[in-house]
Length: 142
Image (cartoon, rainbow, N blue to C red; front, side, top):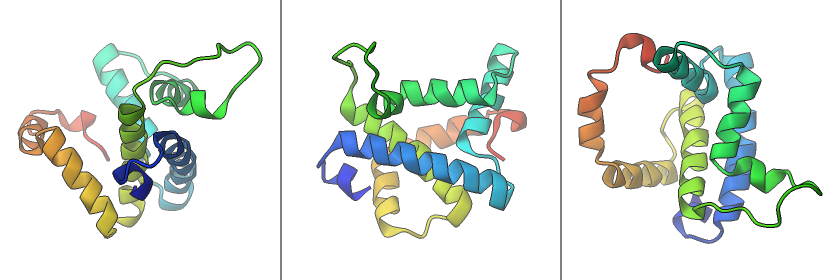
């Protein structure tokens, strides 16, 4: 979060948040018996599209969307350039990791609260909370 908030390296944030998400995902499933972000996203996809993608496929899809795969896998057959909004990808990758961290450990980290307040202001948190009231229970995080 510090690297993101100080704007030091969005590449580093994407890479580190992606690695943290992998660890937190496993910890939530194995140790805490809680629903990680990817499983929640799969449930939402099932409700909206009528089908549930495989966990591995959707996990990969999320990593592609967030630019995580582009940062950790480079093959001879890949293009030399990748087009992405680094700030947005870093923000979203970090948000995904933080959501799983909160499920595991709560919101006690001061720097995390700074990041969450930034998101609240940027995305009009009060409006999102009002919209959330209309979300069916089966589409809410567990």
